[in-house]
Image (cartoon, rainbow, N blue to C red; front, side):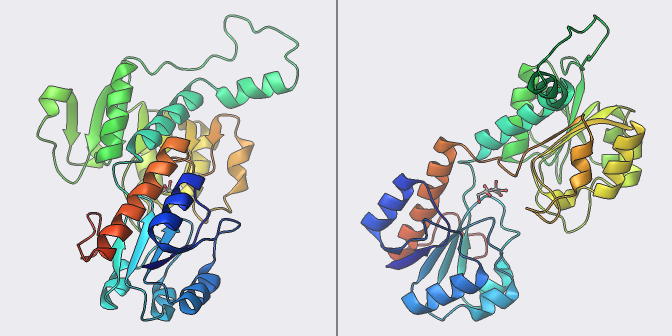
Length: 317
Ligand code: 8YV
């Protein structure tokens, strides 16, 4: 089956694609929507592998040639694809769950610790040459142990973060669409109402899909204990960024670790002005092991489709 790989992928993934498929690769650049449609049209490919950076909105889906029957995204989120428009055209959309859980949870903990322990400020001191030792009461961070971490969205990644946070001695509170069956066993406390959970959370980490509107609004940020620390490795549109900037300016939010932003890769440059905000460029799944596993998983979905079987990670059929 001919496929288009619309984004540069790890070499092992490219090698497998070329071995198992009639693959049209794009190892030098991400194909934008226009180039993607043109390549799919000229190649008459039946499948395409994309990343979360490629936006396949209704207009792009409508422009896809009839030959396209499956879109395999190398991401667990699929808010960059109008999967209902794809379904209306008989196009299956698949994602890559599970394989990026650990990498993303690791980055969430990294951001939590970097925010709590003033990593950006410490790095700036060293970059400037570190000329003076700090006194016992200077440049102090906060310790996660013994503190409450509020997890918003207790899916695979949320649970993996909870497991890591417990290792740091944190107590896990969570808000989710439903209560988990094993709260007692894993020591978590469920809150049906986010507004009831937030006043108890010295730390909050977001792990839910894009909701189309902010979950962390000004009102909810104001419910947090003063100085709370916010982490986001999920989606930028989950936070009212103007409200967060204001909360950071007053100290209501004491620090933040952010990997995702509205309007990526453009992001609100005012976040750079805060020494207590640690920023990363949407790299939750960005490890060698995970990006290979994601590519493998996407190719598995394409291979199953090629064999006439339903892809295991289909999200719209
Ligand atoms: C992607 C992401 O993994 O998986 C997701 O939903 O948010 C991203 O981290 C990455 O952009 C590769 O597509």
